[in-house]
Image 1 (cartoon, rainbow, N blue to C red):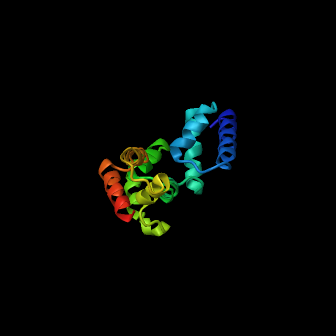
Image 2 (image 1 turned 180 degrees about the vertical axis):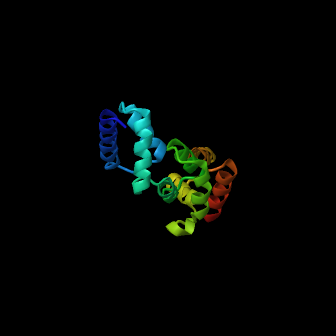
Image 3 (image 1 turned 90 degrees about the vertical axis):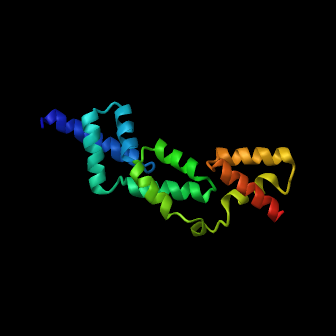
Length: 157
């Protein structure tokens, strides 16, 4: 490696460390961020490998953080998977993280029903229920899960 290549690689590493100071990143996110900042693709790939070897980037841990973050906020599996995809987390890590999550870990009895209680505030109007069900689907719950949550909400009221 020539002195210029070595200097460019060191510059890329410094930039990556500065970027990492702001938040967690996946390998893919960091690579894209570095290349978007004008770094050479080869240097970006080497820098990402270097950060992984140091333990500063760990896609498995990052995936678990994302899953926990969105699950505690009452989002459904589809929305969580969408976030994992957007952040470039490899699919083979998705199932492990999603399988390890249990709603009881977050002291949430039923995130969909809890969301409906906040959204509807006791209303049982047909239009309100329809809009709330659509809202649940947008939050990543399947249509069947949303319909089931509406039934449970009405039983509790």
